[in-house]
Length: 359
Length: 248
Image (cartoon, rainbow over all chains, first blue to last red; front, side, top):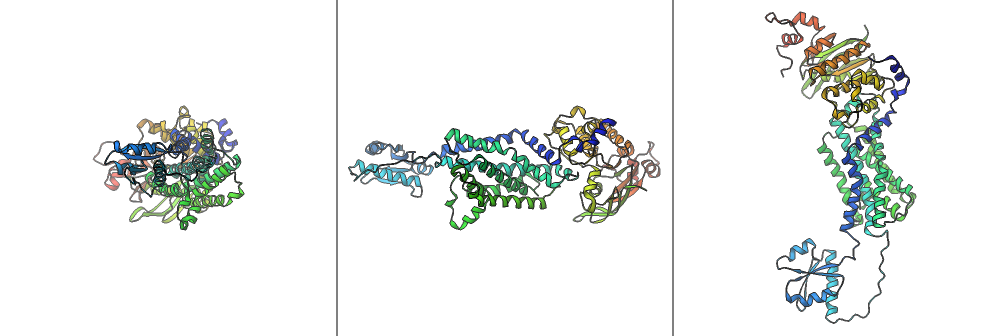
C-alpha cells in the first residue's frame, strides 16, 4: 500500500515532481533518439561521408587531365609521342572491340585513330569529350608543325569559396537537415501509431499540440552538432571559408529544421505502416534532391519550372545557407527564402494538427 | 444511486458489421464491473466508447456525471485507462515512462508509490523492452493509475499472462479497490471475473444477455444438472449461448 507521507508529498509537488508535459515529452523523444546508435551515426556521419565522396568524385575540374585512347600497336607510336608531350593528356591503349565500352564508361574521353588526317571518335554530347577533342586537335596540329601567332598569358584563379566543394558542403548540410527532420519524425510518428502508443497518449489528458511540438523540439537539440560537424569538417579538410556569422547560420538552420520537422510530421500524420511512410518520404524528398540544386545548379532546369523549384523548401534552405556561408549575406538579403521556409513549416503544422490520426 | 458510468442504448457499427447493438449499463461507484464475453462480442468497442476514444453511432454516455462532448479535459484527468496491446517506448525506463505520463496530470501519485503498488521497484531503471509480459502489463496498470483516478478502465488486463503474473495483477487491482476506486474491465476469463468483479454483464453479439453478481449468475443458470463440479461463469455462458467462451 502507499504510505501516507509520500502520498502527501506527491500531492504537494505539482505533477509529482515530473517536469512540465512539454519538457517530459521532449526528453522522452531525445532519450529514445540517443539510445538508438544507428540514428546518431547517420545524423552526424552522413554529411561527412557525402562531402568526402562528392569532393573525390568531382575534384576541381580543369586540373584533371583528359583521357585519350589510341589503338594498341606500333602504328600508334607517333600519335602516342605527339599526345604524350601535352601534360594535360593521358594516353592509354585501346584493344579492338572495347572502344564503345570505354567511351560509354568515360574511361576515355576520345579515341584517336592514326591516319592523314587522323579520326576522332567521341560523344559530342559530353562536355569532357568536347574538351578532350579540342586538346587532342591542338596537340596534334602543333606536333605537325603548326605555329601559333602568340601564346596567351594565363591567370589561373582558384579562390577558396568558389570551388565545387565549397559550394557543395552547405548543400549537403541542408540535405542532412531535410533528411533527418523528415525521416526521424515521420518514422517515429508512424511507429508510435503502430504500437498503439499514440492511442494510449490521447487516452490521457496530454495536450495533442504539445506532443506534436515536442517531436520537433527534440530534433532541434541535435541541430547544433549536425550543422557544426560538416562545416568544421569543410574548414579543416578543404579550407572552406565561412564568410557569414555563426548566428545567421544557426538561424537559417533552425528555421530550416523546424520547417522540415513539421513537414515530416505532416507526412506521418495518417500513415500506419513503415512501407507507406518510406514511400511517402521518398516521393517528397527525392525530387528535391534532384531539383533543389544540392549537387548541381538548379538553373540547369528550364525557365518554365524555375518558379516551382524556387518554392520548394529545400531550394529555399540551400540558397539561404549558401548565401550566408559563402557570401556572408545578411538575414534581410535572404528574407524571401526564410519566408518560404516559414510558410512551409506553419502550413504543415496547421494541417498536421488537423488531420493527425491518433489511433 | 451514485453512478460512475451510465450508458444507454449504445450502437456502433463498422460497415455491415454491428459491433454494439443497443447496449445499456450502469456501473456504481466503488464497484468492480466486468464485461464478459468471447472475442468479437463488442466488449472492446463498448469500453472504448465509454473511454471517449470512439464516438458511438447512437446512444448516451455519462462518466462520473460528465459527458465527453463537453467535459473531455476534466474527464481525462480523472480516468485511468489501460488499452489492449499498448507498447510503451522500448528504450525508455520504467521510471521515465511513468514520469512522462505523470506530467500530463494535475494531481496524482508519486512515482515511488506507483512502483511499490505494482511491485516494479526493482525494475525502476530497466528499459521497457527488457520487461517480461507480466511486468509490462503491470507497468501499463501503473501508467493507468498515475493520475490517481476515480475510475479505472481495463481492457483484457490479464490476456497472455502466466498464472503467477495474473495473481500479481489481481492483487494490484484489489489494492486499488480497497482505496475506494471503481473498475470497469473486460475479460474472457471466467475465473478473473469471479475473483475481481462485484457484478458481471455477459455480452454477446453487441448486447448484454445477462447481468448479475457472479454468484447469482452461477446459481441461476450455471450449474448443469448432469455435471458434478461446482458451477462457474463458464457454465453460465454455455447455458446462455450454447457455446464455449474461448471457442471462436
